[in-house]
Image (cartoon, rainbow, N blue to C red; front, top):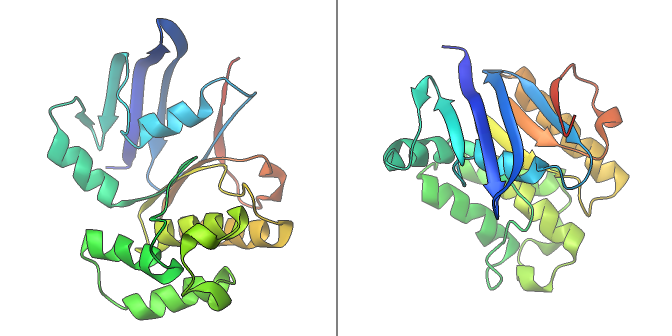
Length: 211
C-alpha cells in the first residue's frame, strides 16, 4: 500500500472556531510541504498528522485504517517509526547533548550501529564540541540541532518537521535540507513546513492552507 495518511473532510476546531477543513492524501515516498500564511493552522495540522491531536470531525486514515482514540497501540507504533521536529519540542534539560540523542534510540529499542549513527549526526550538525554539555546551557540554535539529530537518529521512515530551520544559520539549514532530501530519495516520507522552500532542490507536493 502506497497510502500513508489520508484525511477525509477533517476539521480541527479550537474554542468552537474551525481552523480548517481538509481532504488530501500523503503517499509513501512523498516530500510534502504545508504552506500558508501565519496563524492558518500549519503547526496544528502537523500535530494532527503525527496523531498528537485528533480531529474535531471527519476521518483520518493511517495505512488505510481509520483512526480513533481507541487505536492507542496502533498510534504508538506509528509514532515510533516517525522522526518528529515540532515547535517547542523539548529536550531533557539536565541531560547532555549525547544523552538526549541516545535516549531516542533507547525508547525505540534500536541499537544497530547506534554509535556510528550518533557520531555521524553529531559531526554533520557540528555538535562535536558540545556533545557532553548539558542542553540547558545551550543556545537556541544548538538546541534545535540536537532536536533534529534526535529525530533522525533511527533513520525514520516518516519525518514530520515544523519549521525545522528555526534558529539555524543558512549553512546548517542547507545541510539539514540536503539530509531530508537524501532520506526522501532513500524512500522516507517527509512532511514539513518551511520559511525557505526555495532552498529545496527536490520536487515536492504541497497544500496551501487558508485559501
